[in-house]
Length: 197
Length: 197
Image (cartoon, rainbow over all chains, first blue to last red; front, side, top):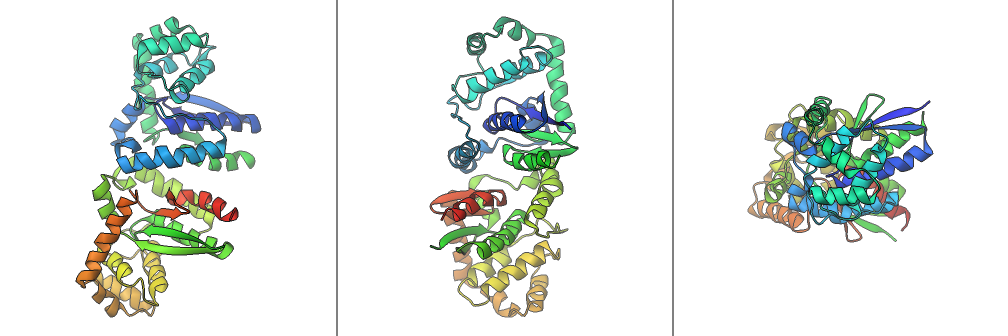
């Protein structure tokens, strides 16, 4: 029987990129449905009083220089640190909310994640977003127009509030079988649960 | 060939307790020497700008109610949350520094860790410390007297500064083969390295 995993994400987070790539591997191995749940990580931090790990220089150095490379090797996933990090992802996350029901949604996810964490693009900049999406044969103009719709703006706020109400304090946060998991480094517990299904 | 693992610890941290217990399992399986390195976690936090995860209520709730129990089950380790948490461990850590060269050092480690994370004792209280150590046939008076020695006080400060200088920002922090690992949840990487030795 399929299991459904809810994946609360924001493109801003390199560990979320790692989880996104690793989950695609798990989806090939197991009967897994991934439900992508956009949220604005900055809003989650503000609501919970949390901060990015890189706000603590020693923690950021360890995370970016030691810990992430170890997991990239373990998962066989390529990740390049973004020179523009931290990037404001408000526009990207609004597109994600607005495009959830569109055919291009998964292609958009890959395009935005890869532009951020493989190509090092400044994805807080609308011109850069437009170029990167167009290069992936996505309708950049239509997707960017979504971000100006009041209902899309409101939907991202509501999605972020819902994440916080469910206990989310950072990204990635995953829910499966009524259990919450925080961090790409907990995907082994999810894999255990998938293996027992 | 033996590998030496440096284990920077403070009794204040439940994840450090979990690491302590898990490392004892690994020491039975592999040719591993554990070098216990006391530090004052509060001093590390102050020096690095870091805080305990439980300072963020949503993070603390997840850590204590979901994440720690998962690892307790995985490692087959019993842990009970301490009702006095967070406990001021200045006295305990001074004893740890002062007693490092004494025969009773490992017995002291077990006594202090278990009093904190199995018995729920208020180990910030000197009377409680005295009772708990005496119950484990340790010379509580001699150990507590160590904490008044200026060289012991200075040694804990120096040990904490050394930890910070090496990149430590929390507990547990582990070093092996020139690599730093943060968190009980990275012991699988250490086990991988031990298995390849």
